Image (cartoon, rainbow, N blue to C red; front, side, top):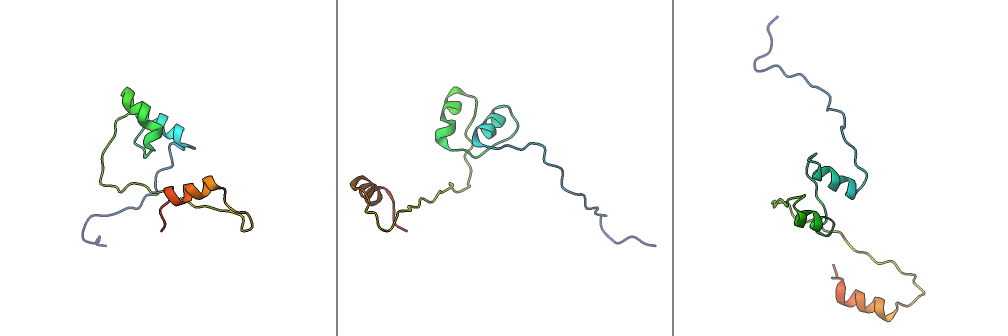
Length: 93
């Protein structure tokens, strides 16, 4: 019997997960130890970058945007501080 034209392709299952990390600090420590790269908050890694333990890699990936929501009880008025924060800090979508 003749084999089909072109290279023979065998499907293999994906490799098992080698490392499982359960938080940003574990991910940062893994990157410091040379186990890969991570996306982390600038605030969390600024010390490591300044000290030379990590390097920043500039990419074309758009920045991660975390939405901010507010939840209040319908029958309770906002405090003046909360009202000021909402008016001055949050952009309206």
